[in-house]
Length: 79
Ligand SMILES: [Zn+2]
Image 1 (cartoon, rainbow, N blue to C red):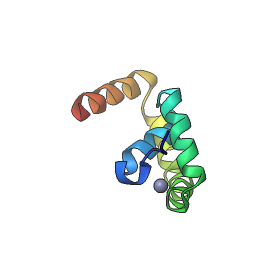
Image 2: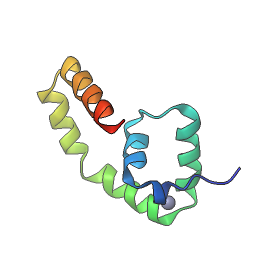
Image 3: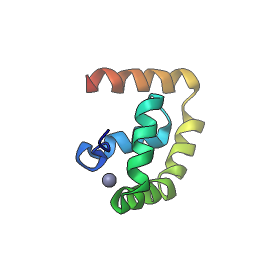
Image 4: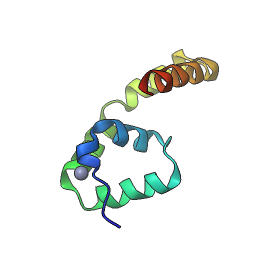
């Protein structure tokens, strides 16, 4: 099985990976790719360092229902 081309897939997949919303097989595939990819490791580190504050603020501002609605809206727009 060839490694997933996370770099070419862009940052969307990596952000979903770090948000923990990916299906388990895909999450593991990205896990394996990031383990051997310095570029993705650097992105994971920078993403984990900066927007954690933003995510915390979002969690406080938006209740679970609003977050679900936002996630549904984003998913609908993407497909
Ligand atoms: Zn990569």
